[in-house]
Length: 168
Figure 1 (cartoon, rainbow, N blue to C red):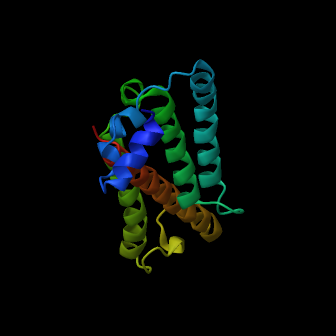
Figure 2: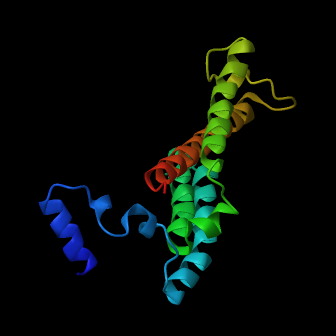
């Protein structure tokens, strides 16, 4: 019986698709095609780099922290799907997502808290106490801090969601 036939029969019986032979653990096993694995190994660093670019230059044009974090997470998910979980856990352990997400939240909240404690409103970048910078430069740096915080937060949350959905 093919995998599709098992899936259709389990759906007809009202069982979740994960009850089929294989289930979720087969989804994140190493992909057996050499060309796909090699292409994903070559593509993943560029996907991650593009996510960094979108994050860093999002305040100049389309993009920003959310989009950049999503693109970076998709690069790691691409590696997890093509190379298998065991091969990618060495570079990106399962605890990596929640830790990076928490760091992103701290950067975002910390930027707002510092400007609040410096006498401004929450996330009023003009009040950030950055020495030897003008008000405009502080605005750009404040936006960059927030974008990096959002990117790390989104990256961590998406990676955590993927890892929890594909848990063995």
